[in-house]
Image (cartoon, rainbow, N blue to C red; front, top):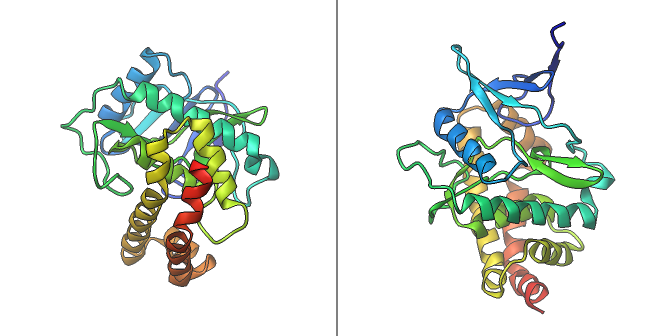
Length: 257
């Protein structure tokens, strides 16, 4: 008997277009799907089993991937997703991804999306979008990463900064950000040099994310327009960027001391 179709919720770009049939997930294929599938297969061949495995591409422009069972946190994020132990597990999982990804050659002929890519580039493929909606948990610990659509060559530190934005979070002035940033750095095993640079890279990543949202809003993207209106508009982005600069020394001290 064929498995019933199940719509998978979450995400922004592919909202309402991702479906599951048993152990198979079908979703819109990115333009660079063939290169991305080769990358995912290379991760698996090198022992990284915490990402979907590509199954194939359909004639109507969709991709098929293996389904990864577990829990995915969706807004408003549940308490268990924001615990220190959950954050530690995200840092450890990201380190595992980077250690494996560093050994996979980047296909330089592929059109990797520039949307959230590291402007300095690099020779390793980064996920770039390790937000709560893209992490699968089991028993309260991060077990896998999904949705590699925005993956692009970059520095490992860039991926850490992007992850910090969502998981600390570094999105709005808030209490405890410095301590949680230290937890992420410790669980990742970030070097002293990386810790010294991280606050500045988070500022850089925030500017790139703002530009990404601005492009989507200018293009009339209804999801981004709605999110911007509900989350404080551009004033919130201004407040966030000022807060990051004003607290750079505080974050650096928390990371290094």
